[in-house]
Image (cartoon, rainbow, N blue to C red; front, side, top):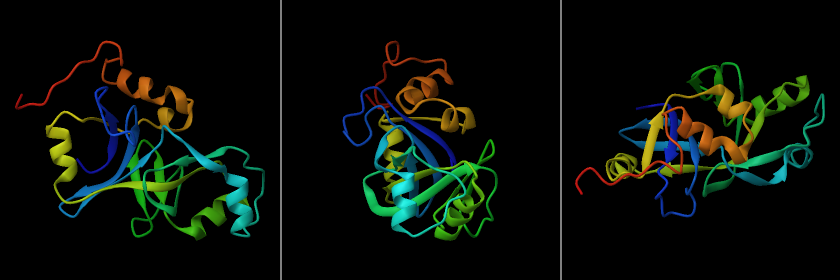
Amino acid sequence: MSTGMLISAPAMRDPNFARAVVLMCQHDEKGAIGLVISREGPVVIDEVLEKLEMQAGTDYPQPTWWGGPVGMGTGFVIWRGEVPEDEGWNLGGGVAVSPSAERLADLARTGTAFELCLGYAGWSPGQLDREIDEGGWLFTSVDASIVFDVAQADRYRAALATLGLSPDSFWNSPADA
């Protein structure tokens, strides 16, 4: 697994990730980086643009997304499109992610629709693999409609539905139980 969407198992105990949907940007021998897309962030995008003194071609009154508990001062812009590999990640389904302030400024200046995650989720080498083996996470391909068209409050249920599951009908236990 390198990119895709992680869905926390209904029994997830970590409050940071209970009922979470995570866009996986990178997962390799060095560890993993993902962005929680099912939680609202602390400010609206217009406030971030103003603080960074970026000119916008339109208003962005929507809230930021809480990307995870690591690096809350770090921003990741998510939009429909593609990004050069040396700047970010193309996650499939036309979903692009970049930590570049220049990309954020360009998208805002041209009035392009985008979302902004503040913070991220990070796992050390092997940590995410163990959590998956212990039954903490499910994995599916990136679905752009869940990322951009489904309300945040409904993303968990929608992501589970891509696997034919619902929070009410799903039960799991670790593979070695």
